[in-house]
Image (tube, rainbow, N blue to C red; front, side, top):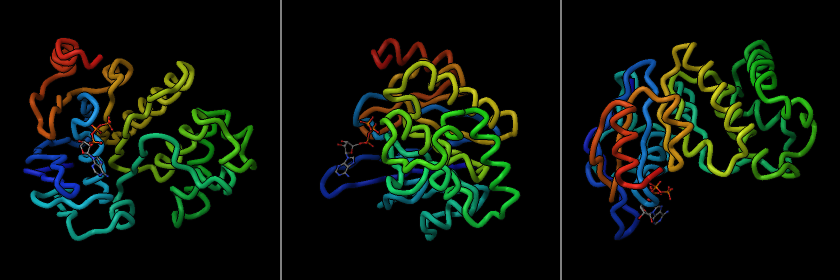
Length: 230
Ligand code: ATP
């Protein structure tokens, strides 16, 4: 489903990714773990097209993404939930969520809204309120829901649990499980890898812009523990 090969990303003189290769098969949930600055976000951002790779390739469903903009990648079926709380602050909570399903028709939008507001009742309670008035954790939920609202084939989740209360971690985990049941392919990063380890099937350990190891969730947990990522 997703094949990243020999990817290199530079920010000026800083080399954030040094020839990274990973694969995510259809329906898999793959976890990227690693300390601060390991390159996890750079990899996610290169897949969605927010940063340009200086070398290497990203293929999605057999298609080379290099020439496609972020918008085109989203339309091709990739959903992206950024680290932190990126919402349109003056737009209502409901409109924020549905921008992710923009152009998909009323029925699909309604289906997305019913599904997401069922998992996150906060969305319904605050539907008409400007998203900027919500707390940081609540805005993170809105950003997550927006990424899910197009029912993407591939979901990129950058630190979805960071700084969230246990109740929100449980609900995001539930949303991820429901997407897994639909056959969605998921690539997620996590520093606080414990909740993510319960969801993933496989993982990669990154350090210094490189993939150091890959393995099953159990192997990744042991490695991450040994390297004190958890
Ligand atoms: P974190 O968990 O802190 O987000 P990460 O594993 O996601 O870390 P990246 O954010 O991809 O790592 O960062 C990889 C390297 O690239 C780091 O050295 C970081 O300082 C650098 N970097 C990231 N974004 C930029 C940027 N916009 N400009 C310059 N350097 C950057």
